[in-house]
Length: 66
Image (cartoon, rainbow, N blue to C red; front, side, top):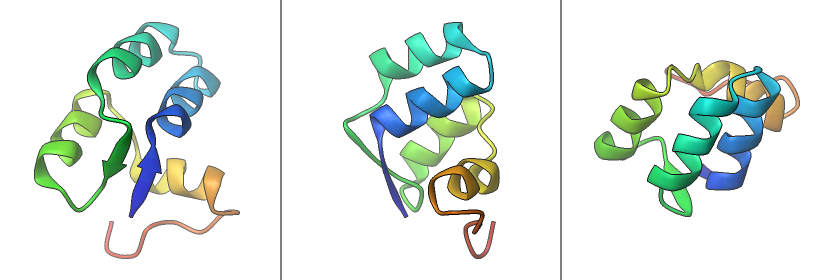
């Protein structure tokens, strides 16, 4: 599954973590692919719950297999 960097930044901001949001904005590529191990490790570093983020942007549906 792919997310725009802006979606991830918005998600972090909505969680009240502006510091991580600013760092994600600097560090992440424009498109983030959750199937890419390098991208997944960056998301893990920011403590992002992929199911919670997917639920926010996919109308409550999580990511199958996560």
